[in-house]
Amino acid sequence: MALDSRYGIVVREMRQDRNLTINYVASGIMSVSGLSRFERGEVMTTLENLVKLLNRMNINMTEYLYRVNRHLWPPSIVFFRELTNALRAGNSARIKELAQSEKEKIVAADDPNDQYRLNTVVAAAALAILDGPDPSSDDIKLVTDYLFNTEDWLQYELHLVGFILTYLDTKQLMRISQSIFRRASEYLKMVDNAQSAAEVELNILALLLHKRLLDEAEILIRRLDESRLTTRISSELFNFSSLVAVYHQLRQSNPSITDANKEFAADDAVMRSHNLVGDADGLKHQREIIIAGD
Image 1 (cartoon, one colour):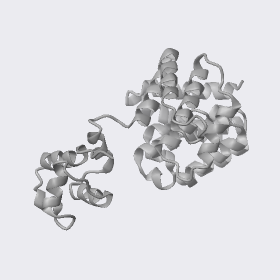
Image 2 (tube, rainbow, N blue to C red):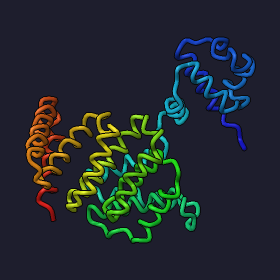
Image 3 (cartoon, one colour):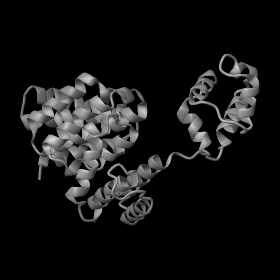
Image 4 (cartoon, one colour):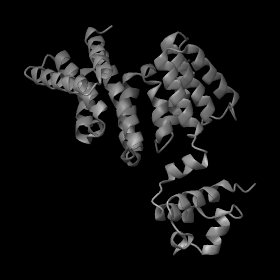
C-alpha cells in the first residue's frame, strides 16, 4: 500500500498554525525524530499515537480529517447534503444525477451492505417525494435489513433512515424510534448526530399523528420528553412543542390542549421575534396538514 504523506504533513501544518513546538507535541508520545519523520511524510504512525498527538494540540479528529481531505467533507456527508438540498429545491434532475452517480460507484451489487447501493435507494425515495415512482418494497427492505443488522448507528445510518420513514409500517416506525436510542445512544452526545436523531424522531411523531396513531404517539412523546433529546437544539424543541400541541388537540384532552396551545403560541412568538419566520410558518403549515388528515 502506498504511503499517504498528507496525514503527517497536516499534523505539522496544524501544529505550526497553533505555534506549538515539535518537542512539546511529541513529549511522552513518541520521539522527536519519529514525529519529525512522520510530519515530513516519510513514515506513518499508529492510530493511537495520532489520537494522542491531536489531543495534545486540542484538535478533534473531525477537524483533522477535514483538513486532510483538503477542506472537503467525506463523500457520504456530501451526498446527503446534496440530496437534501435538491429535495428542498424540488430539483428532480439533480436527484437523478446523484442517483446515477451513486449507481456507478456500486462495488458489489449483491452485497446488502454496499453503501452506494443503499444510497441509490434513498435517492429513489427522495425522487418519489417529487415526481418519481416509489422505490420497490425489496429496496426498502434492503435498507431496513441493513439498519437492523447494524449495531451502532452513526451519522450515515441516521441519514439513511430519514429518507425511508414514509415507506415503513407502524411497527417498523416504532422499532426505528426505539433503535435510535439503543443503537445510537453513545453517539447522540455529538451535536450533529443528536440533531439528525431528533429530526428522525420528530418526523416519526408527525407520521404517527397524521395516521391518528395516538397511543403510539403518546409513547414516543414520553420517550422524547424523558430523553430530553429535543431540548438540545432550539429548532427541534419548537417542533416538538408544536407536535405535542397537535397530539393534545387530536386527543381533545382538555385542559392539556389549552396548555399545549399556549406553549406553542409562545414558541411561535419567540421564533418570529428571532427572525425565524420561515421556520415558524413551516411548523404552522405542518400542524395544519396533520390536523386536517388525509
